[in-house]
Image (cartoon, rainbow, N blue to C red):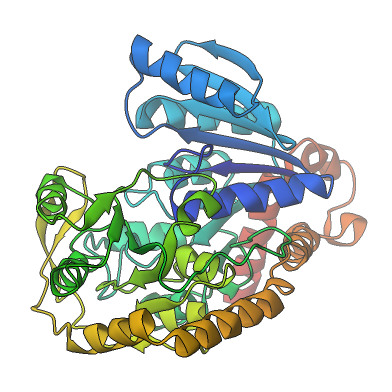
Length: 433
């Protein structure tokens, strides 16, 4: 098969959970012999200096640049051809050109496209070949989790060939709030393992990734204050704004660490991972990454986090986001209405993990073994079989459903997607009559 992925965040190096999961999914498909291409963008406009920094970073990672001109950087990594553009508008235009030139069997559109700029383009160019990868409910245009409701954008999701959800929570949400069916498949892959055991009692940071309002920075800050002699670490990412940075920098026991592509570089410095999200996370990748390295995780009981925790302690109570104000902050993140939190349960658990060695080591070992068992289920084959089944059912059987000559000569000249649309309309008319 020929597969084209479009996403609104950097493909490589990948620092966020969604774009890293997309990368590993495409690389696994490429390893199985499929022709894979990605259209993506960087997170900011590339002036001459930033462009050289970006190119130097790729080269330092062993990536051979195939071309870099006109704001487009093309390279290949692990069998996937990556087309990186510098603006949303250019990504949209390039996506439409690639659909024409590459003619993919399927166009995969990732959820990090809340205004559906790429989804609309894909539906325009390949109306019967679009598959939506639902990795979060926050970017969906309906239901209580959304900050940007839109009946029109919800209608666009009814036009795709299929929706694949990262968790049962996302699938249930789409069914309950929009009547949409989403297939739950392992689209967040983690490699083959086994991974090193990195958790160490008494060593390393209490770490949080992407500290911001909706991810529970208020709980992280309060715990850092109450455990003032314990080193904490924060990894600012897409949600972290200037106010968050000032609050973090004001605490002497908090160290700011840069985001990393190679997650072991962060986790080898971590003794406990905090994931105190106040929004309904779909299935946070960092939770499994920490557990699979033998690091205890403290996570909030929201959305699909319990699924990500695989039955492990500790899934702790929070008061979830109550809604969103109009507009976004400087990071283009919706302004959340965040209730006051009770850090008491979090303080009690963290105190035990920091002081009870036997409990820490038992929890770390159990998490490591649980994650190792689950890792065997995280393969690309179910997604591959799903695509193949869609392809088999997409087109009509040849002669049986086509008119006799000479009309069939005209049908033969139609593209596969136009034939599929024609068949769909004819069947609809037959049902109406």
